[in-house]
Amino acid sequence: MNVDHIYQLQRDNAFASQFSAAKYSTFIAMPFSNRGGYPEPRIRSLLLNRVHVRANQLLKASPGHRKFAALHRIDGGSAGATVITDDIASGILGSHFFLGDLTGANYGVVLETGIALALKPNSRVLLFTQDDTASLHFDLRVTHVNTYREDDLVEKAARALISAAQAFEKEADQYIRLLSSQLTPDGLKLLNYYGRMWKGWRRGQPAPSLFVEKVAGNVPDFSEATGRVAFHEAVRELSSRRLLWTDYRPNAEPNVDYYGIHATKLGWRLIAHVWQHDPQMREPAGAPTGPNL
Image 1: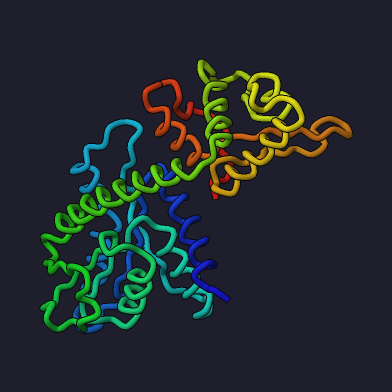
Image 2 (image 1 turned 90 degrees about the vertical axis):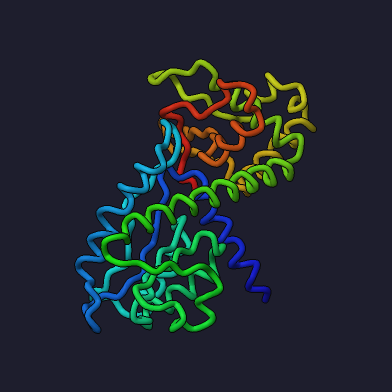
């Protein structure tokens, strides 16, 4: 068994979700107690309540661009160790960024940092400590570790997030360019037609969707028997890359099922990238973008 194929799928799914997310998400790993004099309540409050506010002030994001959501962490509770570990791994994988406080070399934080370093580029793993960095194990120094005091943590963490966001957007741009270059001409034609269907759409109007009869009647390449086969192959190609999703409604009318095929948020991002010269080829507010898994 090639386990990398399994994990690659999970990484691709996570990145696709991050790419289409409205806000940046950040997973925090930090000590849960005051052991050794660590001021856990104060540090927790700074990270959870103030860092994203300062980061958004520095970002000055324009409308339609991502801002930072409040940072989050997995808190201990009654769940078993296996469940908590799964939640931690999933939380780290699904978040845009990982922020770890290595103060005191807490075993839990070190473990979570190791998971993050295995799952994310170093540019999206942000490490901090109140200790001398020379005291850290050499494996933790493969990425830059920031030293901080309580009075400068918010500013340093916010600026680190800005740098990480810039790295992510560069990575995302490379991802969408690669994805668009790997699509077949039929797949691109189908996305182009879908984008054009939505030009001039307004809320309250029926939502345009792809289905073989409509496309075959409007796009010559998808007409006739061979064209209809090409349509279904293009739909399978785009769906497998999480660019399309199927809205299937059983028994929408008595004994009649309805279905329509729509672009996901990732699909709309690709449409906007490929046909960026046309400002109308953008995701309309209210378009059905599905689960975006």
